[in-house]
Image (tube, rainbow, N blue to C red; front, side):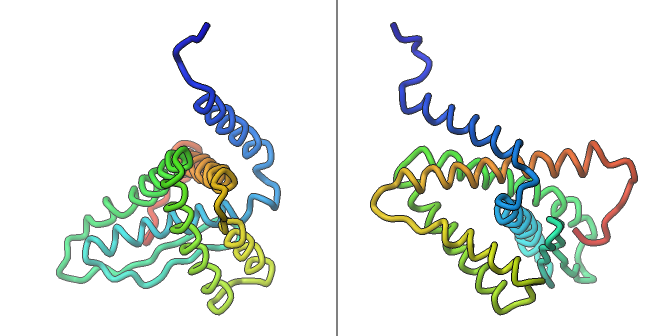
Length: 196
């Protein structure tokens, strides 16, 4: 007798998401999750930079540090309204959370997972090239960024790609949730970032 809630594939999807969430929370400080968290930080800062650029500001840089901090810096032209920070600041949280949701939803569909896999591989390739020839802090950071790029290669079997995208999306959403909690609820010292 069926409950009518979920078919077998949907149950597998939900169990996998809960298993990934539990594993991510248990192994949060493990080095194996470092590249995923750095990718989440890079995506967060990219969303800040994209919002700043969309509001006609000049993005001067995106920094991602080894301690999982980041900074998207931009210059506001003198003839522009100064309230752009009110739009740029939440763009990192909203954009990175939505991208995590897109990865999780896309992992449920074959074509969606392939498209997101290609986009993720391209993004990781750009980050890896920048890490190799840019200003990456150490060899360890370069190796971990190349490791994320290597994990996104896929072949005709899509289930490994779907599982990987589900993991990346889950890590990204958990990291965004933690970052929002850390920046808004847990923080005791009020700070106004000059550039975020």
